[in-house]
Length: 114
Image (cartoon, rainbow, N blue to C red; front, side, top):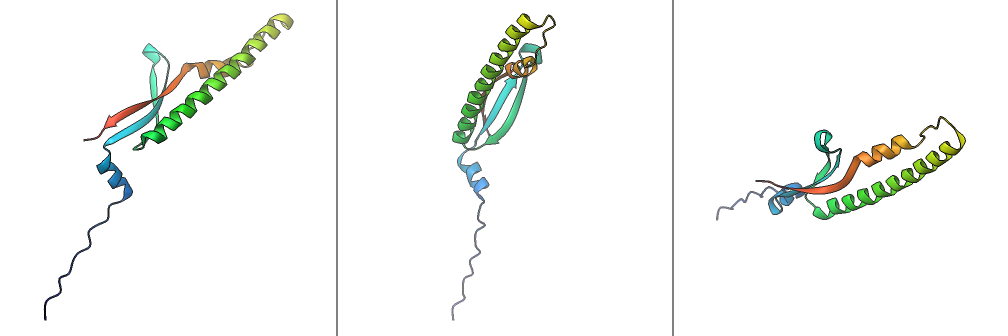
């Protein structure tokens, strides 16, 4: 009788390992705040999928712009009403508008892995 050849099964690679071997580029979803000395970059997440990061950046930028315009409108209305009615006018919406204005739009960074 012939000896049976035993074949060892090859280790299956996980999807993360396959993605790493296929695409050695990692895409970072980031946004920044401040300018010059107080510039700060915040990395929200990293992904091998560029499409996923692009969708997030577009969504972030559209929502960010919408909230800036909303609070700007409220701030200007408060300012007009405050000047007309109260000598000591209080900014109800200035803090929200200012903190949203400090945030710059989101962007993508590509990182090559070696």
